[in-house]
Image (tube, rainbow, N blue to C red):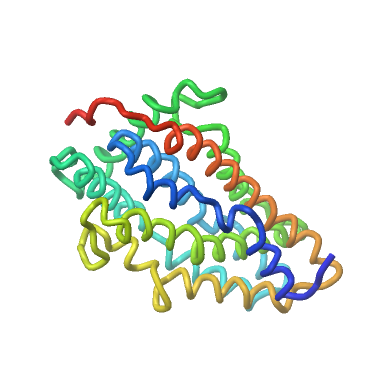
Length: 269
């Protein structure tokens, strides 16, 4: 098991999740508003699960890793209260795709999220293991469950959580946020620009001065000094847990929604 940070970073970059084509397919397919709603429902719930720190920063501190605890706590505090902005962006993109005001009030997070779930129920509800209460696929719940481990405070779980945090921040900075920019802005499908108020979520996370760049560096700094022969296997396991589960979620969404060529009726107001 490697104890070199550069080798670990390369391992994450070489995972198929890092270059998953889901966002390229989104840009190519130009999905219907219902499909966009279903995609955002799954993505939104996954992203919400990654934000809380749970007991993770405190566990690091109690195990004598106070510097790493501070770095993780900075990420947690930076990600607070992003749910409303993500819902606003989703509603805005759906409005642009439908070319009508499906979501008249982009400040109404609850109404937007209710509509996103209805899209997910409509298009993904027949998948095996789909949970009608949450509107989540088995794969989404598996990806979310990786972050439930942040409630544990034992040493092994804490090292795994470090690996998960590193992989999450690298994927967010180099795959998820660039992918969203590709399909939502660069594609031109939605006539959207980063400087639009409704796109502030993406603007805040994008690029060299975006939050994700800082988060990735925090995670690298946190792991670098703790990567030893004793910890390397656990840290790597934590990274793989996240990468494998997110790749599984992307697979099912890509296959069920984007490659399906769904052409249903326009989303009703």
